Length: 212
Image (tube, rainbow, N blue to C red):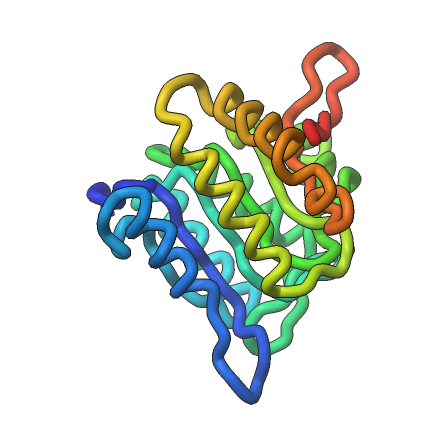
């Protein structure tokens, strides 16, 4: 797994029972354009909270991926696995925290491709060290409103394209670069879809800072 060129893992819950739409083919295109191969990222599905825990521990721990894109139905209090089980935000936080405490973990950012879930409150909950948050993750992104599957994926592709094309700089400099690109090229889409990127607020008060 160390040969994964984009250092990106895409994990997905099943969207609909009657047909198997997936984000995978879209990331194939992104990878092919960026690094001339559709195999430059890792993909898995998760069924429930136990499956989510297993896959995140594997990809974020011993396999050492830097970025996780979570694609699933979402709500204010969690996301859905393929079997319809609600994976609550406390479970998500605890899984990420445990993985980030594992030797070899290199998780930098997590993007939730889910309706409703990525509110400022939930970002603060995931980040807050007083709540057992995740100090090593630099940024968290996602949507705070209901979003159409194709509309949101246009935003997702724009995000990852801008992030990976910025070759130099720290992780925070790269994510600020993405935010500036959104402000210049897609401000209306981000606002209407409730999309934002959160980083830690510097200073004694703590909390999170939305950068869009």
